[in-house]
Amino acid sequence: MSDFHIGDAVFGESGGGGFAHYATVDAADVVALPQDVDFAAAGATPVAGLTALQVDQARALGAARVIDYCRDDFVTAAGEYDVILDMVGNKTAPEILSILASRGRYVAVSGPMPNRWLGPLTQLLRTRLAFRKARPSFHQFTAAAATGLAR
Image (cartoon, rainbow, N blue to C red; front, side, top):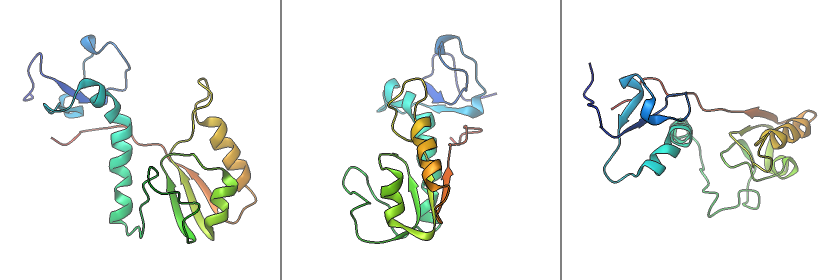
């Protein structure tokens, strides 16, 4: 049983793609759509929102600095970083290597999408190659799918 009824506005992760009018999902994998959120915004939430929720753990784990890419350019900011968790992927590997500590870690969550077929894959591969002989390490992160969203 669930608290949902036919016609309720909900959103979440179904893993099945489109045809929402015909989709069936487990009630534990969706939440009620807040009245002030439209369907377009909710549609972007499962992947971006889940990634952001998982990355909020950075502060909880003791991140000394979290940078808003809309306001700050972390490459030109003073400092050397032990860990860079890059949610945008708009910097080149040489730029990243220039500010990463010798035993630092660079974690790419995504990258630019210049190729509609390969998405961020080409950028991630270029970065992997640039880091292969570097002392800092490169890691690629993909958000986990939603299971049992909290209400």
